[in-house]
Image 1 (cartoon, rainbow, N blue to C red):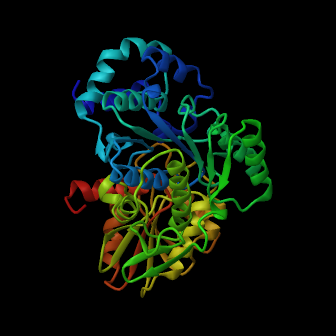
Image 2 (image 1 turned 90 degrees about the horizontal axis):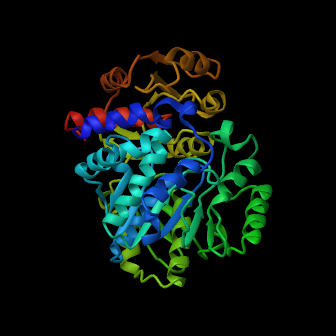
Length: 433
């Protein structure tokens, strides 16, 4: 098999939550433990940092990877989902996993894994662990898929755990209340291992983390209580952060939500320094200022074009959309155009009720089985005062919005990671990206 045939084989043989949703979800760690034993526990050959949370996991993980690589460490990074190429999930110092390694991994070991029928995520996270050992990384940053307690990544013994925030998402698996969801995320807290908690705006959620940390004798640090005199501001040069430790820290990642992530990252850096990591100030500044180039991060308030300005963002749940709407309210434009689609397992009514009513909508659906039907989306949107035309795919919606928008207008593309993935794939293939 060549690379593309190998990827299609993985999708066909191992159900992928990214594509089909709930039917691909496997509760429990049995398969992950079996795979890990077969490959002789590769993650034990390097240090790991474990990152969970409802939103911000990807940005936080990429920022940490950028900073640590600038500090001179060889850094493995596992994140999901990918937007254009599967290999985005597995990187070392920003470079994606080699095509041939993916091919050989599947070819050489399919006789073992086919009988146990792992999910796509279970198999690919083990691929990452094996690749990081092969590349002799110093440290691996591992992002959970969903949850934490029963997530396939939760077989590692990290030196630091990070939980970015808690919001409503994947409630069919994680619970219907914020404390229930927090308890699942808190499952990554390990004995005597420090844990950084990012954003907490619910006392009951805070209690869940404190109780779990005490049970594990794990030192717990709340990022919002750290970084004295922390401020952020948007300037002509972009977002500038300030605190007592770092002055005029430029954050390449835009949007209000990144200020929360930045505070979490800076708190994590302090904890790593306490553990003996050598992280000079220039590494922090360079990592924040150049995270996209250093790690390949995409889809986080990403500007795709100017005049008219086109921005995409992967925020797709109530917690993430809250910050997107806030950011949109700060932008200047003549007219606001929104290309919008959702996954069929999200709380469409709640999210649509939050979206700006002063926008022209281009309702569409992504090219995955999990996409919410465009007609159902548009009809639900109408109940919330949102109006616009319907498009059967992202490409036709993008063509229409470009025809209709003037150079002083603003075009936002989002509602789902899959919508952003389709747009980036289109732009990449047309060499505009």
